[in-house]
Length: 143
Picture (cartoon, rainbow, N blue to C red):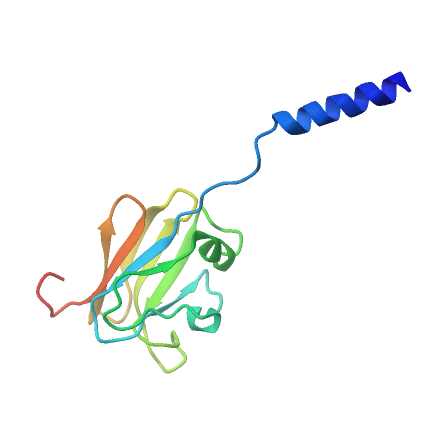
């Protein structure tokens, strides 16, 4: 009985002393400066339009929660790859990606950003402090 009580007390003390397992995931903020819709695929998964995440034309900003990003990254939150499209359904209507962004959703940092086959548009890093991007048309001033 004494051993059981000591064991219970020890487990309760351990549970109370452990920090709650919670971490802050970085939200993704998109500033769409174009007249086109924007969608993406994370780690080759489903198009964001299938989960209701479509950035509207001229929408500033569009914020996608870090928890949605983590789910879409399918367990690869520290090395997630996003293909960005200027369509409302990714590549389903024949659209080509404008950029391929590799980022760490846990730290909120961009690892790399490469242009896609569609060079009419561009993904720019708006802020180096978090996942904050601007979509713009290359022919527009300031892009």
